Amino acid sequence: MSSKRLGIKTIKYLSALVIAVSLVLMGCSAGDRSGVDTKEGVTSIIGVSQANMREEWRVALINELREAISSSLDIQIITSDATGDVDKQIRDIDNLIGYGIDLLIISPCDEKELADKIKEVYDSGIPVIVMDRAVEGFDYTLYIGPDNEVIGQQAGNFVGGLLSTDGGRVVEILGRPASIQGKERLLGFRKALDEYGNIETSKLYIESETKDAAYDITMQAKGTIAEADVIFSYSDSMALGVCDAVRELGLEDKVMVVDCDGFKGADEGIDLVKQGRLKATVSCPIGGKEAFDYALSILGNESGVPKQVILRSNLITAENLEESIERMNRQSNDDGRTIKVGYSQVGQESNWRLANTRSIESAAKKFNIDLHMEIADQSQQKQFDAIRKFIEEKVDVIVVSPVVETGWDEVLWEAKDAGIPVIMSDRNVSLEDPEEGLTTTYLGADFMEEGRRAMRWIRDNVPADGKKLKIMEIMGNEGASPTEERGKGFREILSENPSYYIAYSEHGDFTFEGGQKVVRDYLENNEWDIDIIFSHNDDMALGAISELKEHGYSPDKDAVIVSVDATRDAFEAMVRKELSCAVECNPIIGDQLMKAIRDLCGGKQMPFRIITDEKIYDQSVAEDYIHKRGY
Ligand code: GYE
Image 1 (cartoon, rainbow, N blue to C red):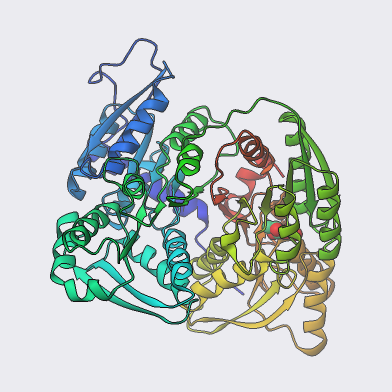
Image 2: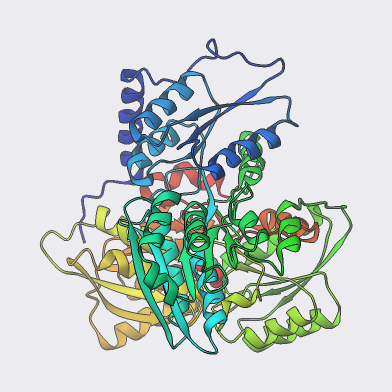
């Protein structure tokens, strides 16, 4: 199969050239600090581009950053307020760069409009932490923010629970159009409410998501409001307008109001719950302290900085108000004591897994963790047995890398009843009721994105030339989250590219032998007519390569082979021109995991998810990187 492939190196070189030229032309070259009145001893300047300073929580973000930085004499921040204007935010960013900042923290006015600018800064070599609203793609250093759909689900679950016995009427107050985060919260709210029967919903639309607009619409809709049991609004500012109108209408004792945001200011979510005017609020975590901590790690070139940190939101009611406030303000007070951890590891099925185990074992020593690891040889029953053993041993924390996604509720309830927190590492689980808090956090990769990257590389580097190219998919073990999600991500991009299709798809269970068997079985019943192999991991790809050569075929010529993991063996196969492309899935997550465990035991609230940073490599760059590979 001949193909005129533009490798990643060529694309990167061209884009870097364009960036460099544009930065110079736009006078946006890395600035000097002559314009900045830096304090004595300042070694790094962090630029903060805030979308606006009109919304309380954005002011709170700046205050959290300032408070965090106040203890660091060698760091200075320069903040800018875009006043909600995209063009001004772009100018603000150029000005901050002109001051010679070493790192940019940005909360974008509009994540779509700012995506190119953020990429431009990131590509220029200045680290970028994006907050609150994630831009499309991954062209930034780190994203820290909430999961707005989960925030809506938490509100929906609460309202559903309120009305589950006798049913009821729910009125939604929403913007027309709703903001991005509003849409995501409504999606989660409705998904959760749909789980409850006998609840009627109606919608009141407002032109702007403000207190006054919410007040006006609530007053105008007096009849509807008088019939309602619950009014839902997805922001504190709208909720205040609703609460004022409900009070004006004399309906406070009849109608409950539930919202999202849960900010700490006067007449904001937490205060309104305290006043008894909100039945519940779901907090939207701000993340200023987390952003600063990670900024220090990035400026210090520390390894293991994740790609995304999805902060945890909490349902706050009058009943749990004090505890919620205490938990939100609690910082990790890690006393350095030895922490006993029970780790249930999937198995030893691949080089990736062996590297993952080594990373966890070495990190445990670094972080004073007493690690008890049990290898399950890809058996879920063995994992159940290990978890029950850890419970008996009264470990402080249980960590699980689950062989499959489902079937974990019972044993996780046993851990919860024993008061032992459970962290999901590398792979995640699918629980019957995710609300129950059976797992504390998930630390691992975005497998969907890995699948998308594989198919995007094929689309961009394996031209169909008018033909329909046949793909063989070699999948991991059935039911494992990397198998399910890599397959989904791959198919998402495949569906946009009709010149390619999956002609054959079989499980290879992430092992070398499994990859060999898939190719052998195919050849027993078919002539080799596959154009592309997409393998869910390197071991199966290398097994497929071995089998093809056994049958006299030439990998990369008789089939372009794309794999996931990017282990050293994969790089060697790319240097040999046998493997074409390797999508990275980083197993070296030991340090991040042990830091999360120490934070957890120190009392700090864990994020929902910590997603690792990953790249993609092909033959054009394999020689450049092979000597730098950590696994
Ligand atoms: O891709 C594979 C290992 O769970 C991400 O499991 C991990 C996968 C990895 O066997 O090599």
